[in-house]
Each structure stands twice: as C-alpha cells, then as structure tokens.
Amino acid sequence: MSSLLVLAIVVAIGVVAFLIGRQRAAAHENGTVKPHSRAHYHGWWAFLLAVLPALLLLAVWTIGSSVYLDRHIHAALPERTADSKVASEALDVSLVKSLAKGIRRLDANTLPASFAELQPLLAAKGVALATDTQDYMIPIAVEANKVQDRLGLFGAVITLALAIAGAFYALRQIAPRARARNNVERLMLWGLLAASTIAILTTIGIVLSMLFQTITFFESVSPMSFFFGTVWDPRFADAGSGGSQGQFGLIPLLAGTLYIAAVALLVAVPVGLMSAVYMAEYASPKVRGVVKPALELLAGIPTIVYGIFAVVTLGPFLRDLSAALTGGSPFIQGQSIFTAGLVMGIMLIPVVSSLSDDIITAVPRAMRDGSLGLGATRSETIKRVILPAALPGIVGAILLTASRAIGETMIVVLAAGVAANLTVNPFEAMTTITVKIVNQLTGDLEFNSPQTLVAFALGLTLFALTLVMNIVALYIVRKYREQYE
Image (cartoon, rainbow, N blue to C red; front, side):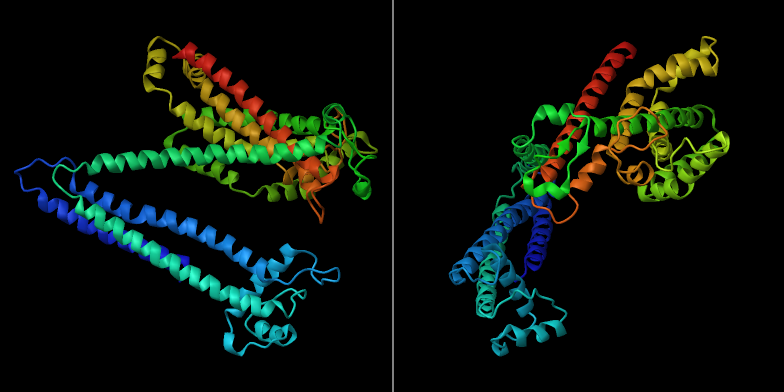
C-alpha cells in the first residue's frame, strides 16, 4: 500500500473524528453544566490525536523501511571480486533499486533471467536502465519488491490502527469540563516551536555543511593566502596535483562583489526611494494604482532576461557610445562593472520602491497632520518628519536590496564577465563570489581537491559578509528607533 494512500486514509479518519467529536461535544451543551471548551475544540482535538501520531509513525516507518531495504539488498549482493563489473557497492544497490522499480511494471512470474532479454520489455514500458545492470540483480530486485510490499503493508496496518485508536481515545474524553481548548492550544504552541526550531536547525546545518568543507580546504590552502591573496587562478587542469600551483586569492572576487553591488545601489536606492516618496505623498490614488503595479511587475522579470538585455543591448550600446565620444577605441568594454551595476540597479528599483512605499505609508497620519498644522510645507514634512520616522524601515529595505545585489549571479555572468580582475576602473570587467562558486561546482568534479572545495570557502565568506551587514543594519535601526519613537 502506497504511503500517499495511507496518508489520505489517515486524514479521512481525522475528518470523521472531527465531525463526530464536534457533534458529541455540542450534544453535551445542554445548559446544566457550563462547558470548558467550545464544541469545535473537541473536534480539533480528536482530529489531531487521530492524525498527528499516525503521520509521525508513517514518516519514521518510511525512513526505516528505506534503510532496511538498502541493507537487505546489500546483504543479498554477491561478494565483490577484483573483476567486478560495477564500480562500487553503492552503485550496485542503486542499480538494483532502479531495476526493482522497473520490474514492478512487469509480471514477476514471467521475467527473463537475462538483462539483455529484460531490457526491451522495460523499454516498451518507458523504463530506461543503466547498461551496467547485471543478470544476478534480477532475482535480488524481485525479492526486494516483495520485502518492500510486506513492509509497506505492515506499516499501513499499524498506521491506520494508530489513527483509529487516537480518534477513539479522543472521542471517549469528550465531556463538558474536558479541557480540549487547552490541549489544542498547547499542541499548536509546540507545533510553532517545532517549525521555528526546524528553521534554526536548517540554518545551522547549512553553515556546518559549508564549515566542514571549508576546514578541509584550508588544510590544503593557507587561510592567509586565501583571504589576502590578490590573484585568482584555481587551475582546474592541475587538480590532480592537489592545487599546489593554483592561487585562490579572495580579494579580486570580494572587490568585484562589493563594487558591482555598490554601483547597483547607487542606481536603485535614489530612484527607488524618490519614486516611493512620490507614490506615497504626491501621487493621486489613480496614478498610484497604475504606477505601483507597473513597478512591481519589473520585479517579476527573471534575472536572465536582464542579463540578456545587458549583453545584447546595453553593453554594445555603451561600448559604441564610448568609441564615438573618443573617436577611437572605446573606453567602456562590452562587459564591465558599470554595465552590470546599471542593469542590476534597474532590476532592484522595484524592490526599493515597493518596500519603501509600504514603510512610508505606515507612518501615522497624525505626524503628517501635526507637521502641516504647525506651518511646515509638504516637502519639509517629508524631509524632517516622515523620512526620519521611516528611516529604520528604509534601512532594512536597503539592506534587503544590498543582499540581493550581492547574491546576484546571472546578470554578472553576462554583463560583467567571469574575469577575476582587481581594478578601480568601473568600465572594465570584474566578477563576483557567486559567479566563481558556480564555476567551481560546475562539471564532473570530485569533492576532494582545493579547486572544488574553494566554493564552500567562498560561500561561507559570503554568509559572513551578509551577517555583518545584518548586524550593522540592526544597530542603525535600533539607534534611530530610540530617537524617533
């Protein structure tokens, strides 16, 4: 029995328990005894007791069954010899599992003993298997399907029995003074706590996954040469040598990341902030109803489209324009910091504008009216009252924009190139940390060389950079919030 079918049946049992529980609780509200909880709380308590323990058991059983099946297949495989045709035991298990899924579409009683004869039958069913599959895997796959069916049936029976038992237990607890509301609220509180814990643990897991690989990378490359090196030359061709001849200087990538993000913010923040002020304070409702959705529509354009626009239209235009101004060779390259920053800034204008507009409109109307009542003009009210009051939120909006600019990849690849240069000329090409992370992890590479492990060091550096930005922004927000509240 499939897990999806078991899940549907468990939810159906929970719904029936909810309806019966609510009906029985409503029947107890006869006016003689004041009920502690409303009828729907009793229904929800019955639903939760029927569904949650059963789903938890189903999840644990599914994971445990998968582990047990892998061990069963591994134990059934013959002993490996020096002339084994499959590269590893893990690949053996994977091939058997793939074969078992394909065999499910065929009649197990009429299976051929040869994979050469079985392959056309599977191909007719739309199943494609690796050519490394061997004949001895066929009976193992058939037995694996039987084991999986037995485990699935046993797990389904236990899960459904637990769901019914939970519903029956909850229904028997229904009484006028039963504290169903407290039970439901306590369970929901634990659910919210679990959700927040999962989010925290996920972040910790991401950091640890990068940290361990980064430590392995620094066992081969000196941290000083990484953090303070000015040359980026990982040399994939020399990966077999352990990276001894490669150079992993972070400075060119970090400089390119901050440089391009700064140019983008110089474009996006003034334009976006002024457009937000106009829409919040000057625009009529009719104009605002047209302009704001149009700006937000720009935020939905994929970044690859902006990158194509930069490399096909804006980059050549700026190059030809600079050539026409000098009358000779252009001083703006087709791929440059200025081109990438300008296009990225255009992409980020809707982010700054939309967030700042929501923040400005959230400023209490009494502050505007008080300023205007004291004789201040509208522009003075905006400069001296509204913007200072909204400054903490605006700083947060700028931080979000900066984080998105730092994490952008496609626009940089197409508009600024992949050259790890170290320059102050905005009309030359540079690249960013995110681009190099993609480059280092692209291709058929093993995670045992500095050329690949450096991507994790770059990712951890980018994480630390974003964390510092958040801390600085939090300090600014708290400082001005204390001043204006």
